[in-house]
Amino acid sequence: MQGHDLPEQLTAFLARRERDFIGFRRDLHMHPELAFAEHRTTGRIAAYLREAGLTPKELPAGTGLICDIGSGGGPTVALRADIDALPLTDEKDVPYRSTVPGTAHACGHDVHTAVLLAAGVFLAQQDRAGALPGRVRLIFQPAEELPGGAVEVVNFGAMDGVDRVFALHCDPRLTVGRVGLRTGGITAACDQIAVRLSGPGGHTARPHLTADLVYALGKVVTELPAVLSRRIDPRAGFSLVWGRISAGSAPNVIPDDAVAEGTIRCLNDEAWHAAPDIVKGLVESVASDYGAEAEVTYKRGVPPTINEETSVDIMREAVGLALGPDAAAPTPQSLGGEDFAWYLEHVPGALARLGTHSPDWDGPMLDLHRGTFDVDERAIGVGTRVMVTTALTALDADGRARTREEAEEQALA
Image 1 (cartoon, rainbow, N blue to C red):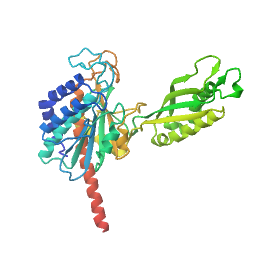
Image 2: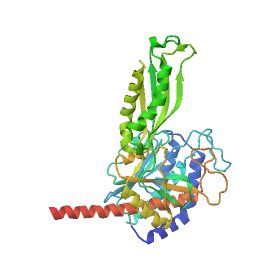
Image 3: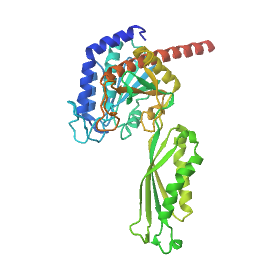
Image 4: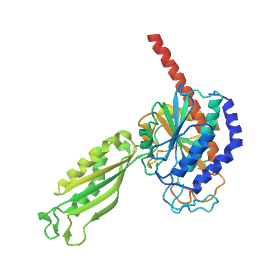
């Protein structure tokens, strides 16, 4: 790392180029693309990286890419941004409003992309100057909102040889210039469950001669959350909430089919891994008491994002160096899902929250996943400083750790 020179170099770089990256963000905002359809977005990113002298590699499906900076000597740090938009209408009255009906960047992925692009251009300059003590892998990931993009990236080999991975996510609850950090769980697992009960059906006058599926489904819907609270550690924050129930077509007919669908959220990785077998077993147990056959479809979403302690410490040091000692802020764990968690199943890393709320804004909260969402664009420069400094701090720390390990091995030889 370049110590005290780095903040000044970043300041000079952003003075020259920050408006370019804000313009890039606005272009993406005007032309949002949904999961696994980010062809224009991918092309724009790739072209910009090539202009910076880099060699991006597109994923096989043609959306999303990775790009290495540096020769590969020393540690490798990955930085990730997601590039897809949401299927909702942009309701803002701004010059860069979405031009695509029913599609909008309402989760800040355009900001994440602009931040990572700026960080990549700066780090490429550092590499050409011989000031990059390792390799940085940029990951522009498709389909975070689906989700599924992170799995595609991992299958492409993007985590091969990586020592740590980092990411930022916009947070409208934090003022621009602040960065939210948390060791351990920062987002939750989010899965979907569908329970289908079946039986012979019959007349409501003779429930004892058939399987009363409506009653059985009612028991599943009410008893399952209660039983789970006794089968899973309450500290795991396990939550099952039903969103749809369907059964029957007439008041005097016991149906032969009944369905309940809901979501399962969990704050703990161990509980998340154990959940499918426990849930299926309990559903079958409750249903069998009423003579119903149960079919459980458990659809995995994402694991909880569990930030690794050393990686959070690296980010905290980097935030202090980049923004000052008061910039880091504690942040709570969210029940929302984030597929950055899949990277952390393979290597240590951390996700931080990037403040986007303008201190000059006195209107309602510009919250995520709403058509009114927008950011204070100064967050792009802030995020660039954080990502660059995090990458260099991590390369320096892991490089020193690797040197110590090699020295210890030689001493024991």
